[in-house]
Every structure is written in structure tokens, then in C-alpha cells.
Length: 119
Image 1 (cartoon, rainbow, N blue to C red):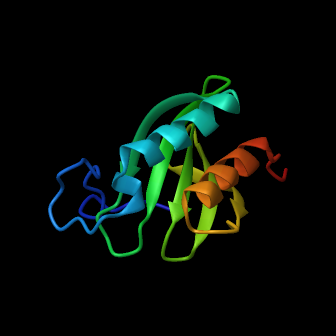
Image 2: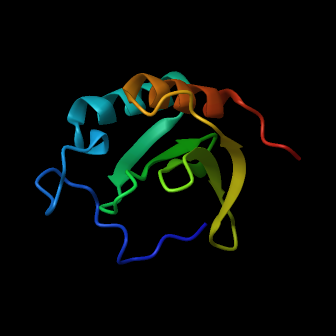
């Protein structure tokens, strides 16, 4: 899945047309960061899309490899993506999240980071 430059705006607090989105809450971002770090990953940054679906991603590094956990709000699934050496990203694991709130997303991040990608 390739992100379009116009779609991603960084999701910084104070962004235009923000509607009290969960992904813009500093406590939520901290909870996602903690879940990544608890799973043994080095948290790089968090980015939220300014679109209507609540899509966000957490960029991480694990075992020297760039990865990211993506919540695809449009398709309502969480995806572990692994950076490919030739560029782009591989969707290694896709899971459903039990609830679309902080507890559900944090549990989803933990679950997806503990799962083994299919070979």
C-alpha cells in the first residue's frame, strides 16, 4: 500500500479541520508508542492522516529493520508493513481490531507485533 503525498499531512496537533480525532490525542500516541516499545521495537514517529477515516501509522524499527503498524480506517484493519530493500512496503500481517478505541488499538498493536508473518 503506497501513501499519497497529498493524503498524509503529519497529523500534528493544531492541524486544520481536526474533529477531535483519537489519533490526535497525545495520550493515545503515547499508549501506541508504549505498546511498540513493550514489544521490543524502537518507536520512530507517529503519523495520522487528515482524511475522514481516522487512518494512522506508527513507524518503528525492529531488529534493524524499518517497519510500520498501519491502522487503515477505510478498510478497518491493522497492517504490519515491512520496508522492502528495493523500496516500498510489504503488507506482512493484517488483523482485525476488536474495538475502535484506545484499548482496542493498543491491544491490536501488541497482537500484530507478536504475530509471525506468513512465509
